Image (cartoon, rainbow, N blue to C red; front, top):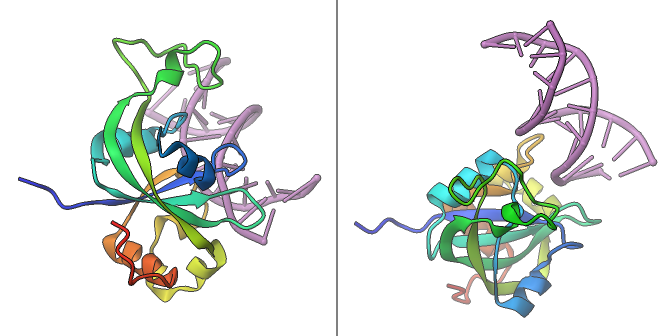
Length: 162
DNA sequence: GCCAACGTTGGC
DNA sequence: GCCAACGTTGGC
């Protein structure tokens, strides 16, 4: 049985990887995630075709910057085995990988970023994981209604993105 | 740059 | 298994 699509939000610091980088590359392995809950979402729940919001965190104006799509389910994150990588993990082995990464493909860069401030003002988005106090999860689920609300807020809802 | 919230580590 | 100390995240 085919399960319906899920929706996600991926945080990234634009200084290290931005929506422009994703646009240029077309697709990328979402590696370097070192949080177990985020790992579990990628490994266990994100599937081909799921829709993704790309969020720029930690900048002057945190905002949703674009849209992406899960293009392949998770495989072991190669950086955990790489001694030269900042994400190297000595407890991981090829037999027992610890960290996983899904692949996402570029869908769209928003012509105007949707600022966190705007999200915070939306009554409909009150329950969003992103807006919860102290929320730091870098891979987080988004409800379908929340996703639709956000698409509408981009004022481009007439265009079929997906 | 500050600092609150969070997750992880490690001594006991 | 508890929990204090520490490091990190991320908005402001």
